[in-house]
Length: 237
Image 1 (cartoon, rainbow, N blue to C red):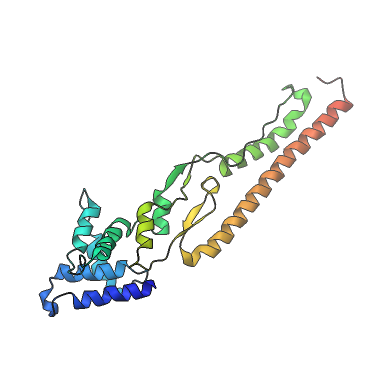
Image 2: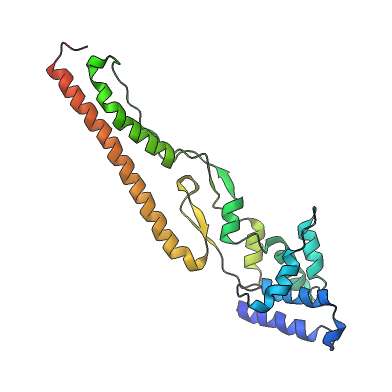
């Protein structure tokens, strides 16, 4: 259905402008082309000049408003409420809603998804022999800190301006999808890489959980050995 709407936009750009192409200024022509190119996920080489012009609009303030003003140089941009809404959606979302940009901008604070297990050491005298477990315990704690003790992650909520841009009746754009959770290093991926990225993410999470459990088991095993030794030599403190 959206392909039909895009075709309708193209037709409007042809029939609603002056009959002579020379009647359009260079910026008007680029604005019409930018609307077409930014409404679709397909970006042929012919889109280059109009996209360079559009993304080259970077005033110190009100970038969105300046880009919207440029798009509305196209005579069809204000043809009806849908076209007006389209230029609003494009100016707010284009260049801000791809996976790489979402990953770079949607930072959130997170808490550890797995709690660090702690052990009590009955004594610190060398005769306790618990010191033989220190190295194993440090490996476990270091792995937990690197893998689970993160304070920042990538947010999983699609911004409203992206929802409006991708969901507009006149756009047909690939929608990035979120993988995982912020606490476990989740991220956004483009549709064409989503399946592989999801499989890689799940494999990583499984390995991390198994590795943490292995290291935790080694600490417990070491403590159990020491406890057994202490039971066999009760004269030790």
